[in-house]
Length: 107
Image 1: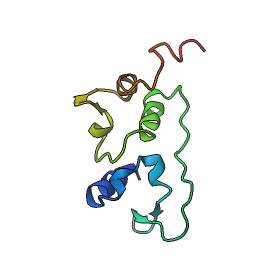
Image 2: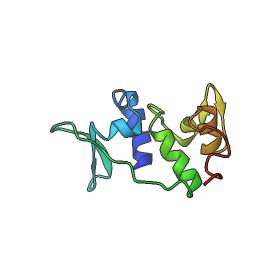
Image 3: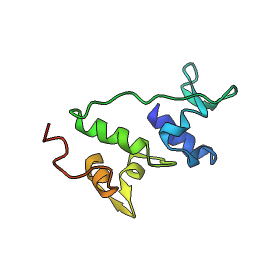
Image 4: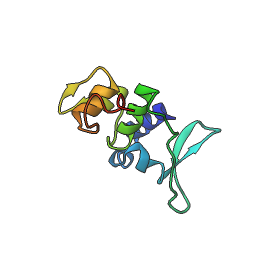
């Protein structure tokens, strides 16, 4: 579904204005076609699957899906001000989404 979100952002300029979290309110996943289609009925609150902070990169990816608009690939999610970071955690740090690198080691 995430890869198809990227493809939808390439094909539909309207979709590019949303983060993945916002996108779910305006588009619906069509299971049979395996693609996103514009929601025809009322706007709905979408859900991104939960990711526990111990599952590091998945957790950081989830954080980025709430702030990056119109990504067309994983590299778009990992790019901040023209710099491509190698991990989602580094990207979150660059975007100042984390307080510091020891955030979860304290618990």
